[in-house]
Length: 86
Image 1 (cartoon, rainbow, N blue to C red):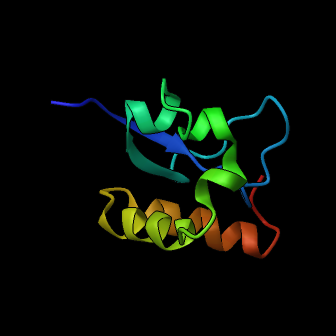
Image 2: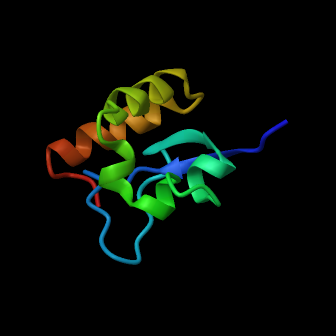
């Protein structure tokens, strides 16, 4: 069985260099697709190249809808959209 990892999606997250995006901005990937050793892994080829042609925002939204903490995530998203949350 391949291991599954939470791959943070930095694009559009607002996280700066050295900052991790929110844990709800993740998509499940196998470890080879996330960190390598594959040349086409997310960390090997970079975010924009890896996610090109993939609707990662839709995937994040689907994971949010299935999350046991969905209401908390949606509250944070709404507050940030209004400029309220830290």
